[in-house]
Length: 154
Image (tube, rainbow, N blue to C red; front, side, top):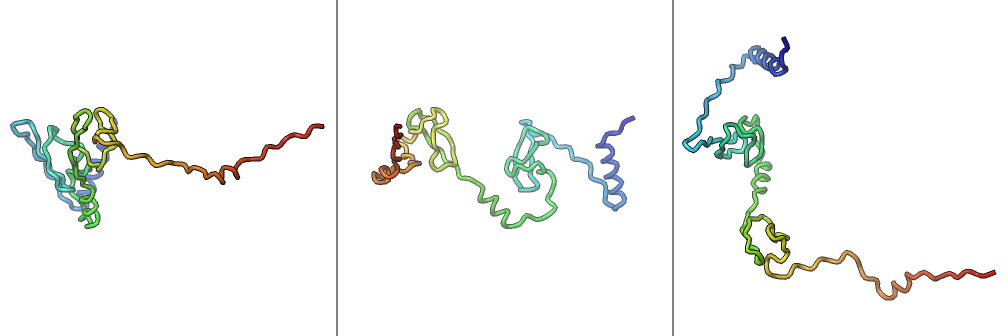
């Protein structure tokens, strides 16, 4: 009879736990949905609370960790916390002057309307694009010309 790797690892981990004197893990508490069929969850990493239709979501919607239901083994540094808070973007609602479509964006000046793809969504002319080449001056143009060589006839 074949034994799966998961069963082998489970028995190995149980043996290690018993040898170290660690208590056995507590039985999982049955989580019941509310009257709307929604489950309440809390991320043990970032503290975010949310409601979901899934009994066991794949990741936290705030910090996107898949380990949202396992507590941290260490306290996060202040720098990391500041960085995470700095990542939060401020969204604003903008409306296209051409088609009337409204959308939320974190960009200061969105390049185009997502509905009609117009670059004139603000109602004013777009900013001119910078040139990628320089025009040659008259003296440079004259100096850059190659002299034509004529072949000598024999």
